[in-house]
Length: 410
Image (cartoon, rainbow, N blue to C red; front, side, top):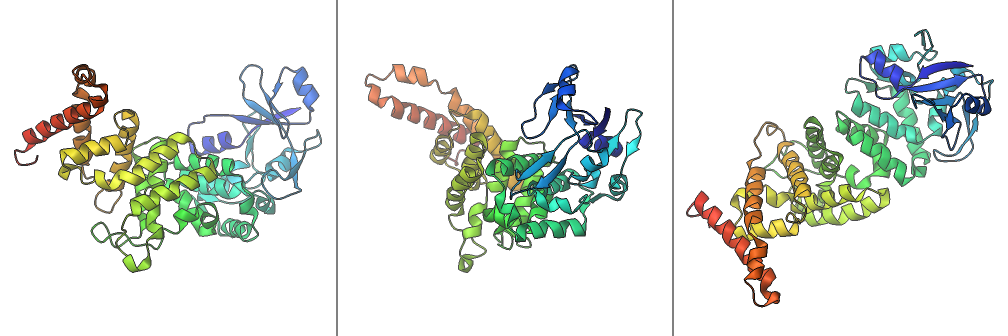
């Protein structure tokens, strides 16, 4: 029995990056022998075991044969006669097909080290086309490794997989899993661009794909289209280490502009509502978690009014807090403001602008929270009047605050 460290840990060590998880391949043994040595079996589709002390993953060397469409359409062969080179051959990219032995020596049968040095994402073999998830993984690695490019021959294989319908076999949960990982990378826009370049974006996220080529309003940056703007917004959330909910909201916030009739360009009348209507079925289709979906809906619906926060009358301000559910979910409202900041700053020349609108809305919300709703309720003889009285008390507080800011503002 021989054990080799494989995959991402080896790759990241060669890149000088911190290693999070270590995976191992075991050659020349059986599942029964692994169990005898104290390893705990956890693999469902192929033999994977957890080390009894470190809990690292140890997988038996295996080969795979395509038997049906989709990423589960494989027959796995994991026997003692499978070699390390055969196991590495089934991997997606050469940079992920490198191993280390017990002595620290590098085993690199598919020249992954030279591709790391050249900054190239290249498939290991023609077997790449057998698994549609690899399209998503390559796009995700493009987002992680900003200085890497996709090899032309690999990009062509990705296009072939789109043309032959292999990408249509992806299950929603797996699409979301890879998309979410890509959104959390250094440059998430590179994932979207890679998917678009191979044609997969139009099949996976057609609502997003159609934004490219749709002009932005003239007052923002007429020199780029809406798709490019959305990419800038998304990368802004990555630069500022925003959580996944904010990054997904950034990706979704302008979907409605893709449905604007061409005759109305570059204006986008009522695109917020159209975005809202598109996000719901998209999230159902991809099984997007509720927290991501809900923030995306709020952002799509109300990001436009946030940009006018300094001009809002107290009545409009209070309505925004109510409609965005800021009083019951202040933490989500803060994430909403982060997404709005990204939309504002994700424009050419606006990257270092101060988004003072968010500070205005935060202060206004503090004013509203300072109103003692319980005390107001106790003063009501008729319980049916409580809701209106609390509303009027909050509105009065906002008016007084606005008046202090500027005698002529309220």
